[in-house]
Image (cartoon, rainbow, N blue to C red; front, side):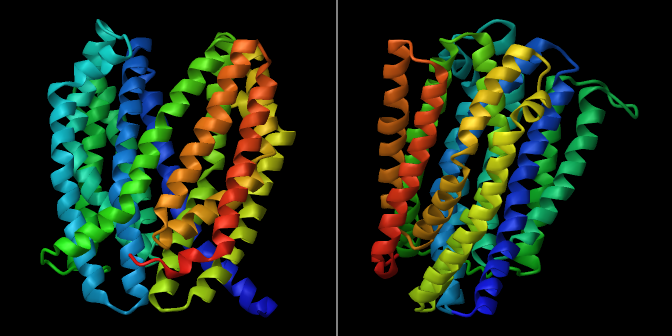
Amino acid sequence: MSDFSFGKRIWTVLKISFPAAMYNLLGMVQGLVDMLFVGRISALSVAAVGVSMQYAGMLYAFMSLFYVGTNALVSRFFGAKEPEKAGLVSYNMFLFAVAFSVPLLLVGYFKSHILFHILGMSGEIEEIGSVYMKIYAFTIPILFAQGVLYSSLNAYGKTKIPFYIGVFGNVVNLVLDYVLILGAWGFPALGVAGVAYATAFTRLLEFFIYIYICFIKKEIHFVTRFSADLLRRALKVGFPTWMERMMTFPTYIVLSALVARYGTEALAGYQIGMRVEGIAFMPGVGFIVATMALTGKHLGAGSPEEAEKDALAATVAACAFMGTVGLAMFFFPVPLARVFTSDAATVEHAAEYLRIMGLSQIPLGIFFVMSGALRGAGDTRTTFVVNTVCIWLLRVLPAVVMVWMGISLFWIYLVAALESAVRAGLLVRVFMRGRWKSIAV
């Protein structure tokens, strides 16, 4: 492979991954803007909306059932030059996602108070949070349907379109937050209900744009016919990823509870460190999207060796980007932490977390690419097993033991960083074996 062709592959990866990374960053920015406006209402409102957003975040675990299956099959059929099958997958997953979301809408609207009782919260927090959840619940079908359109566009490599829609949505949401939460331009101040209405209207507007682009402008192919076989195949690919997300999501809560044993400042520092690291993850998310799309496309075209070469190029690019991020986390943890707090003890705890986790960014970059390539090939069972087993047995279980023994947080964080390296190494080994090249989806 010539240097030119390798450089061209990296450029292809970046053209797909960068808009995808920025799209996910926009989602984080929108949530941050919402919380900044809510913070001007009251501390109770911040707590109530914060808990509501955590439950809303669980919806993305459900969405992985549709996202991964849609991406894997659409990209495969796109590469095989079978647009009718790609269109059938998109259409059937679109309908099924809407149907699947209805029970979640009903739970969010009628049983939102139970979600707060689970966390031992009642009174004003429950009352305020329920106001938010009842309005937000009506956006769930839109969120799921939009997720299928988003993943279909990504499967074709058209990641710029969701990015542009995301930019527009963020601007609209910012204006609506100002108008509806605080009251402006003759509108009453709706408080927490205002942030929910702003989110709902923004999401509805974005959805109409997706519909126009996908169905009217025909940026992706749709075949409006039911296909039980293709629906089953797409869900079969997506199901392990859904199970993976559902089984690993609780680990964040467990680890937070363990860190809380070391004091309020330690927990606050850990949360800030995770928030900074979450922003640092955005390039990695972009590389997942890119490798999923390219792997599926090349396998569909009958060129597994091209998929392997693109994965190598993506690995080099991911290591460069994530390595740079890791250096920033290692050498400048204090300035990064001070963006979120001025409390000295909290900054110290956050800096400790960031220094250690900065060492794991290159392994994480490799992990992101390998998991994206395997998922794009339809090998979601392997990623499910590796991720679930490693996180619970090599990260959470040692943390439980070390907390029980009274060992410092430094070692708990170091074990977490080492777990990331082990996980990356296992996926590299699976990828190098090459069984993913012959998986039928």
